[in-house]
Length: 339
Image (cartoon, rainbow, N blue to C red; front, side, top):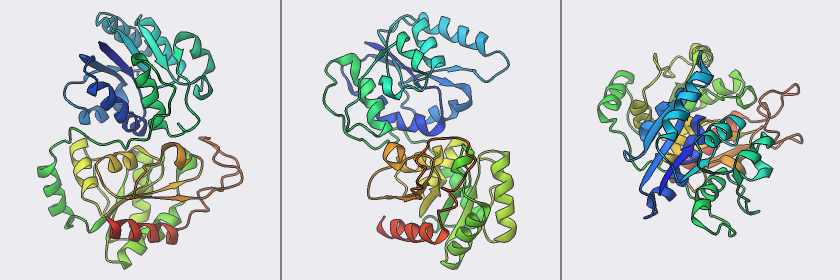
């Protein structure tokens, strides 16, 4: 059997789909697995097992329709036996449908764009399948038969880790740090509603310095770097990476951190998949749906009356203001001591 997985984005969602990828690769009847990703997130596929064939489409570029059609034509020539649409959007459903193979997708209740149900075979989810990892695994099981029973959560893990020893050693020397004596603070958030106030980040970095740990102010885009620079001004001993790390360097630094801290972002999920302890905080999104699970992970939840709302924007933003630095520092101490 020859399969195509359509999971275009985003960083964390691709990490969540790794157990589904592991499932199909482990099936003896599967001879070939391909994956279609948005070009913006192609860097994540560097951690895929080498037998996975990766294809890219540039849906945010200057010619998205042209890029989509080129990808469709190329994929049609592969003659897939089935397609797994793990994106759950119209754009992914249209691309998968036009490749002309059986397309399996998300439960109708979880499709954000309901019309896409007519372009695929929605897979019904069990009531116990609340975590997105379980849901992706359920869709991946659909081409192979009975999916009536609940699929258990399986933690994403990197089966083909990069070889970051050299860049990590260079960074250790450059920043004058040692393994397990630093905490990566990821000042990202993706959605505006996931971002902590600057003052909370400053209190958090200051608390780490007082505890004898080095905070690294991680960032992934210009806006996040600007926030990190403001925190650095207040906490001069914090480390601010001058440039964005490549995937090998990022994996190496995250894997050897005492803890990785941040909101519901790809960096948190990558760190968990690498086996690093994590502390994540939750307001607009829900830990029961997408948090790393297990003894090495702690979740700080604001639980406002209006949440989780899963909204990217909010006119009454309260949930992240409710998360305090002291609670995060306590969780960091807890998880790093237990790891």
